[in-house]
Image 1 (spheres, rainbow, N blue to C red):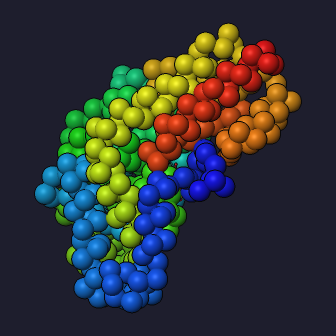
Image 2: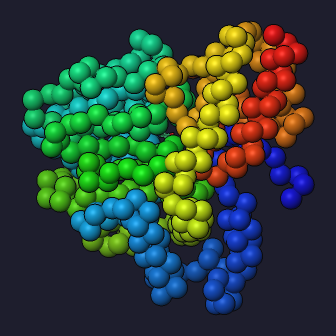
Length: 362
Ligand SMILES: *Cc1c(COP(=O)(O)O)cnc(C)c1O
């Protein structure tokens, strides 16, 4: 494995090495069938059993109540930006959006094509470096749902505690921090996550839905756009992204074998702390973008004193096998994406490198 590097890409992101090795081992023949999972019918009993197991594991790890179903959909998280309002922002209703980043804003914009939307709060004025306090969030009088983003991938903010919405169905985009820590699923009506950050490869979007919500869902849209269709057909209405689902299956087993979500949380806090400690003790050489109380354990964003140093940082980091650290253009600087699959060792080596770089250039 000598040519593998520490890949801090925001997504598609690094996968557990054990999962990649398992995929390689099974690639030609899935469970002794002589057929690759890539070549296998989604109507066969082997595929169906694997997908059912994936759903069960997903619910088990998140401790999801019985009335929730797991759906395997295509189109990425961006498709969910449109599907959520198509299904739930019905005639005469309004939906509330908590705008804490670029993806939250896109979700809001897609919903505004479908119906009436309200910005419950926006932290754009701080370039999304902070998350709002409970009292800043102003809901409309009777919203169909409220939408939030649990981790803002570009800016590196993550809710330490979710706000309370008193009975309003909460829809959460958890694309970049699903399974990074335990959550109380019963507080959410619908959770969605594009797999390519914390769950697997690009190509599948996992949705966890409280099926009670379906009673209010719009049935006057094409079947393929209805959550109801996916629930009733166990995500086998049409061909699911089968290879991506299988990879998610292996990632979930990896999470379980590594102690589940409580263990992920402990490890993620420790990993992030290596890097935040260097930022905080660098006498201003590194500046964190996110405010301290809402710093993400998944995406660590920071800038250096100037662009020349940032270029040098990226080039030198690469020599230490630390790659894909360049930040998003709307924040600049660096972003270290350290999802579940990033080993602790990768964060430690990055922190050591940062210390040394600041010492030489500060
Ligand atoms: C990456 C990301 C998206 C976009 O996902 P696609 O699968 O590319 O559509 C949406 N929301 C969040 C929070 C993300 O991190």
